[in-house]
Image (cartoon, rainbow, N blue to C red):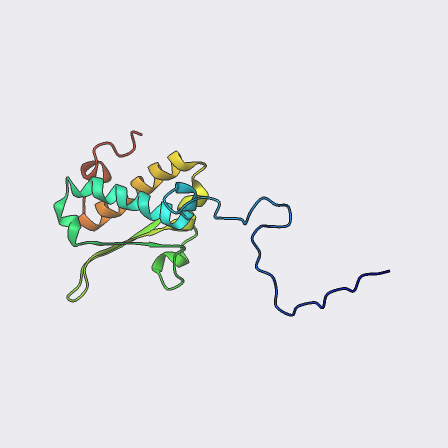
Length: 147
């Protein structure tokens, strides 16, 4: 004789393991591990490191706003040039502090690896600080162009 099939419950059973018996999946890497840092966050860290390096020599940079944007905006004067800018410096005005903007995507495209990206970020920051201060890049950072 066939045994009766118990009625199917409408409530789903709680899952304790996946179907292969290896347990539920967790995150690939914990938040404190560098794998979980996005490319944008990593790029901002490179800019911040470069700014901190320069602030030791140029304390007036503490009053400058450093920003990272993905790409240059259409309204910038550089948009009409043939080459895409890597950064942009804007002098201070009455109610607005000086700003230096570094464009992430154009820099990333020009760099082949992480070390090259860090070097290019630092060069762009030095060039923009030099433009803002009216100095040559070599006077802003004596190691400019040597690395």
